[in-house]
Image (cartoon, rainbow, N blue to C red; front, side, top):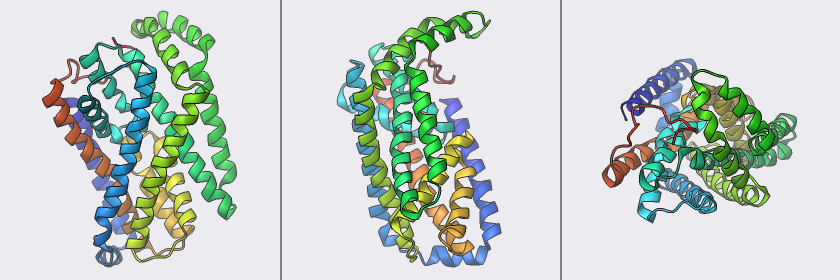
Length: 324
């Protein structure tokens, strides 16, 4: 848990630095004016939509655990899922493998067996988000080729995760490495679970759920735009949000902090034609409603998990997908 605290402090520090830079660049007075004009009566609706999007994501998580034949009491399962949101600030959200550490403590299921559920979440987050991005790109006839490239990249990644042959090659390679050789015996479980969760039917179901959950979050983002009093078209907002979020994820920075904000503020200025103050103010509001609100929910979830199941045995160390 100490490591999680350090990661959170690091992300907060990075976030403050990035937001200060954006504030200065946009002009402090323009930013203050834009934030003062925001309709704060929309905040409950915005946070409600974002919360509902995570409730929908939980349904996908529960579906994956059912495929893996891992069962827990509902309140424990919900608490573990919510606690995973604390790792929204981890690079690519892959720190959510922490959920597998908690599941092992509750059920004894090996991390290598349940970690693919987190990988499948990220994969279908990608397919669902790319679908929304393509809708926005096609509507305005820009960015389509770049998004199609990421669709192809996602497809290749899924094929690699499902490949038994590549799994065997990776196992042989790991056996020859001095430290990583201990992961080799668990690759079979990891690949088998990945193959189950990324098969045709689970992939379609997961993507459909992802499309719905991202749709709810995007509606929340669009309310942020309306609250700022600007009339940017909905599909343009979709495109800006998706592209900046993908850029943040690919940067592998904690929570995409810096890359996502720069992309979002930049595109609100160049693509949507908004002023610097409004672009940065919108970026602040959107990231608070999505990244930081999710992180706050996750921190609350961590406290609940600690009360329900106690401290994980290896909470001080980063979870390793191959540990049992």
